[in-house]
Length: 576
Image 1 (spheres, rainbow, N blue to C red):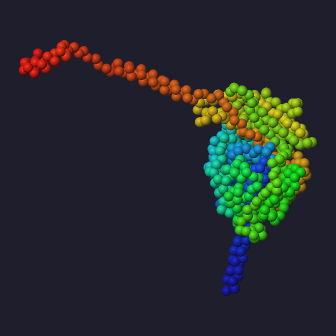
Image 2 (image 1 turned 30 degrees about the vertical axis):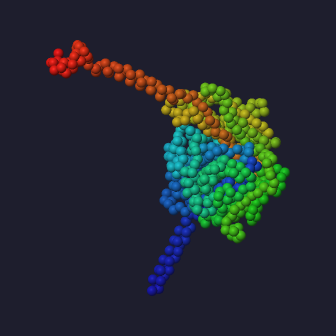
Image 3 (image 1 turned 60 degrees about the vertical axis):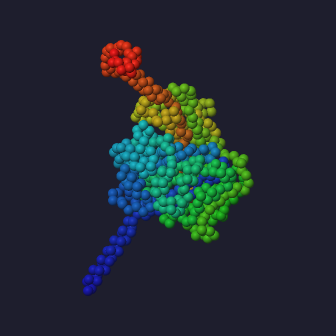
């Protein structure tokens, strides 16, 4: 019995060690959710949702099948196609930088997708095509229309947002679909990726009929990379930004509350989340002080320098039991103490606009205006232009003018288009002097498409995707580094190397260009006229060929003879 007892003890110890080893190998994951509410001087309100899911697991290793918080659909996609970094955005509307200020994360109108693949991928184009088709099915979007005619490989733009130091741009692909329309069918699969879906936490506010009754709507999925792109720790960020027009919604005031905006209130945090907070921007603008009255009173105040500006936020922690002591739900309300119709919004340090000029349907000109409003600092900006092949650029007409003088770019990369194969790609690094406006112009010629290449509504025009500007903008206020766990999520998506500058990526307006369009009603008219002529000619000719002619002898006596025979019959005389 003693030996058996010793063996039993050893067995129990081995089982305990095995269980401990299994517990040590269990992947650790976490969820953080955050809502940022920012009243805009124009009277609108910006609401930015962010959900960050972290998972310490090697998705590239075969056999990973257990998913708890990280969505399995994206995990398998990353593993199968050796994705290093992935970014997808679906946007309806355009962010008005001059009226709303600098966004925390801007996206172009329509759909945008850019992916970094690992260097182990042998055929990047095939992986890119398959990946876009699968994402099209996951998010119910038209990403399957991404092909070689709208895909480019930037050489300087779109560096990884994570810590990956990737320099081989051959593994990068970028595409944009400015015509894509965002609707409820895109929001539903986006919400299903959340661990709590829309059943608990901040996601209960994601009511489709309220979100799409807005001036701007942008939802995105970001999977940043780590230092080596062979990550054993993955991060998924789901962001959703909405701008509500308080006047268009019938309120007529700048005062708002969660119930007025979303028709719902917050009752609890997501049970699976380790952090659930609501930030309300109560910063004073200009010389005005203490203009905002927020209720209920926040439990804490957070101050941070965001995009070169010092901001103050009222913080509501949904995981704090003291928040729901007085009521069962949280309905944040914000009121202006006095009318603020005369608030002037300072111009952002970096902003841009683009337009098409010219007349007729043969030639035209694309003009881009880039503004640097910093009073004394000059900084470079990286401009990316993607132009479809049917607009044939005259690269020798490229002109960059700043303060009436020519501004030569320090770096330029141009990839000419190929008809029906690839678009134009133009990248330039331009130095922007302090307090200046830089005008970039280039002329183009419109191509004549085949009649099968026109859209069902050709007279509506053809879209040209937005220009992309990337820059490290100098900050007027020194920024101090904060611990990542303590800083809000909206301040940590674009990491900065130092506190003297912050990264900005801007998008201009998409362009709508008319092309020479044939009269598609003319074939119908020609068909009708031709068929009529053929029917008349063929009918007459067929009638002549098939008709038979017979000679009929004239009937003599006709009517008079018949009358005579009637009279004779009455008299009883034989007829003639």
